[in-house]
Image (cartoon, rainbow, N blue to C red):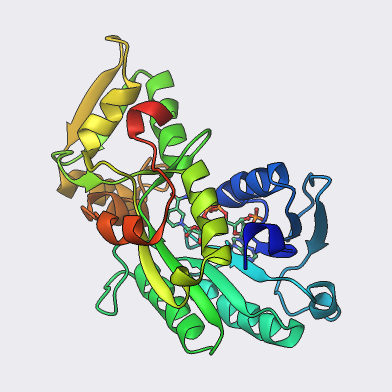
Length: 284
Ligand SMILES: NC(=O)c1ccc[n+]([C@@H]2O[C@H](COP(=O)([O-])OP(=O)(O)OC[C@H]3O[C@@H](n4cnc5c(N)ncnc54)[C@H](OP(=O)(O)O)[C@@H]3O)[C@@H](O)[C@H]2O)c1
């Protein structure tokens, strides 16, 4: 299918960071979208808004008929007494049922960089199980495993900028572990490409930017002013704080992700995608 032949794309988690950017991009490209969210949101003129909490509501399947693909962007990134990571698996199962009933044949899923069958964290295990549900669904799929996705108002940049406002940025441990951030607009382009290009069929691809960067150097992109202090705190203390202080700026899951030192297979992504990936200095 060429880009011109794409009729409609369904997006779940329409209110999230990646979804908003993807929806902007698709709207600019005049591609129709059915945007599914659990709360009200502002839609583009090219979009139909659909409200759903479980992805199984009666009548939902009919609204999604004739869609070319579904981009599943619902993700539970933090556990609470209300939602746990198992929700990532349950909502994926529901999404697959709905795709099958509405005749959607292609699923795009955003997992996480570093997810494997040997993953140990509950978050990664839930992402791995969700991936397996999709792979075993019999539907066509592309699974992306992204590093930090950055762009206007991304979570990691906002987190650092918030600390800068207070005059001090905390770096857990040495800060020498790596990330491989990717620009959210590049992510949107690659997602569209994965719907139109056959070579993305039934593949799992790391979604990483062109540079590997140490976290301490990433922080320095933001700290331009000498008034901001950068403080490294040893891992034992910062994990202790994350475990015992509900007001701690880092929680356990975000610490595990950050110091996990995850970098990805850029070559495989570049072999599959024609999108020219933007370097960090052009993004931040
Ligand atoms: N951003 C990154 O750097 C990054 C990196 C790696 C992987 N990912 C993955 O990419 C996907 C999108 O990320 P994002 O940054 O856009 O995340 P996000 O901004 O947190 O968006 C997640 C979306 O999921 C929805 N959601 C969460 N829990 C839900 C539930 N129980 N039922 C229904 N909807 C629920 C949220 O709905 P509400 O708006 O109603 O809360 C939100 O729209 C996620 O799966 C995430 O794990 C993101």
